[in-house]
Length: 550
Image (cartoon, rainbow, N blue to C red; front, top):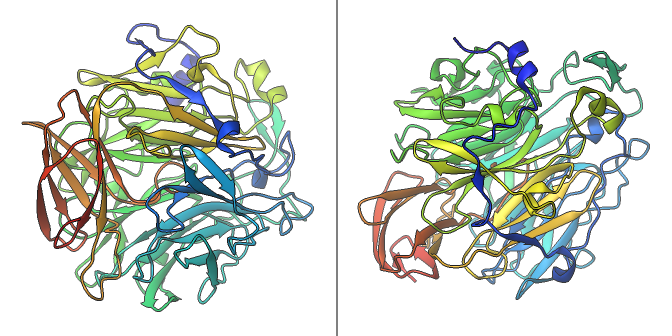
């Protein structure tokens, strides 16, 4: 019999020493200052007094100048008394050797209103990665000129809502990238909601009890033009919910994209396109809308990986404290099952409030770990009497057989023991050494660069380039990549909307362990075409063309 929510809450905070593994294989070091990524994020005041102040703090990796490495964009917040006049977003150019230069003043992005999530993709087919930013109020789309500067494309994005997350994907099958924007609640900083109670303590009001804002979907018309099609395509048929995350991917391998929306304190959506071309929410039928007890959860972050080697995307989501993080395993045929408890992920997350998350192979052994960043929304004055904390440590899990085991360290200065109030994170090879580094955004705190200091192990990084004449989705967003590693395969999906509200430039990373021999890779392009690339050398970044390898 599954525990009740009250029983889960009573067990929160217990440390299950059995099953924990040592952290020695996962060394990471803070290199923020020497890299030149010094920035303090703004999200209202601290301690937070209103809902608007606690949901932001994203970070994005984008190749803004077309040189192949990862630059950094950080949307920023503002304050309740001036939500349109914050300190502004920041853009950092990657100079190589883990050095960055602040190009905020010259990149062409002058965004000072309260900003939240980002979505990265080439939306106009010119080969350069463009940037969408979701905001409280009007959202923004920036077209890359390919030289590290951007121009504003404003046609069709006059949102009047509080937008949180966004994701690009080909929803209508015409080859270009459409946009899904998740919206949250109706919130007026000048007239905030009345306080609420949390376990007897007075806290800010919301989201429960506040009117939810409907999500928005935009069709790409080409040449930087978009039109809102939420009602026409069926997305408006659902009851508006508190959207915090969204990703677009083919969950059942049928060659068409579904839309997974993570909602706060409500059932998640899984939209599928029917034969009439309209999208219908089948989240509850698919078994991914609720947890194993039939409850909607406070979904924050979203991660996608293949935890059982069947080449189908399994979905991990982070949730509120005393409500376990959830792993929905893909059963095939578009059906999912909550296996959080049986795979060792439920209890270890009970004492944390999770946000950004990712499946990633930190030690290059060919098996992905699971990393979660945490931090409470309520102040220490509220959480401490309950035995919890406002600032919380990350959670790292590695595979032990069929289960995940938490990775722990006894060293007080280890990165896994550092307490922060984290929100967003993005992951990529920032220093060109082949392993994955992490860039973490703390709410009302500093940007933090964690360099991966792992030694040993080989790797392959893959970028896709659809170079056919007239191709619009040049980066292959929505593709599935399967690497043959000698009888065992590794699967990655190039999709947006993962982690929490941020974005990473679409590229796939594979750890190879100690075997440096060449590998074969199968690409399932977003339109359903399969292409095999043979004998990819290890320890290289490969750009795979639609018609060959460059």
